[in-house]
Length: 68
Image (tube, one colour):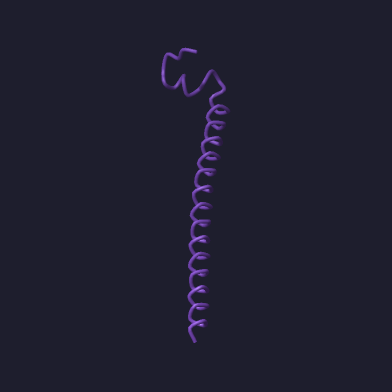
């Protein structure tokens, strides 16, 4: 479809409000998915880091008990 002006392009032949709302909702949804995935990834890495540190502390404490 060919538009002769930018306002005509935005109007999309009378369907502009529907088209632009659909694009906007889709964009917001996709951004939310990316942000949510990044936040979940960060949380999981922090939990793994804490678990590894805890296991190292437990192992160190067990070694200290064995030396007594």
